[in-house]
Image (cartoon, rainbow, N blue to C red; front, top):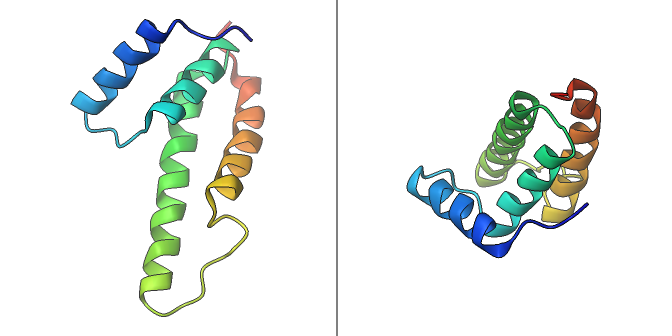
Length: 95
C-alpha cells in the first residue's frame, strides 16, 4: 500500500483539526490508508465511533472505581480491535 504524499496527509489532518474530530495525525494516516484499500467510509466511521464509545465507557468505569476491561484499554489493544473490525468492514468495499 503506497503512502500518501505528506502534503495530502497534512491537508486532511488540518481539516480534521478544523472539524474538531479529535483524531491525531497517525490515526488520520491509518484511516486514509484503509479508505485507499476500499473500506467503505460509513463502515470506517462506525468503527471510529464504536471505539470512542468503548473507550469512554472504560474511562467512566475506571473513574467510578470499577475495573475496565483491560483487553482493549491500551492503544495497542484498541488498534488491534479496530483492525479486526476494519477487516470485517472491508467486505463493504466501495468498488
